[in-house]
Length: 134
Image (cartoon, rainbow, N blue to C red; front, side, top):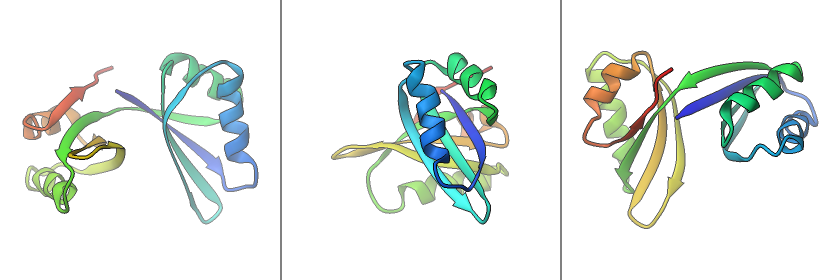
């Protein structure tokens, strides 16, 4: 899976502007996480048409960073994410991003970005759902 990370100013209406750009092109947002830190914001997106979304947002003046992600499926219980983070730490891998994408009665699907996704995929092969590569 590929993830778009958009660096934005922390200002009123920025989420509306970004999501409207995608909506006007018929691009479906499948996952979104919006965070603000002081005067900056970070929007992390998963979309149905990645390449077009990248182009649309870049053309609209947004600063977009693309990342390959790993999808993992974990038992939905306390400590499951901590166990994944510890396994990566013990393997000497930096966990740069973790987002819960979906939860159901028994499992959680999360998206991860690590310092070395290929090595992380090996470490997490028992819970890996999908690995994307550029």
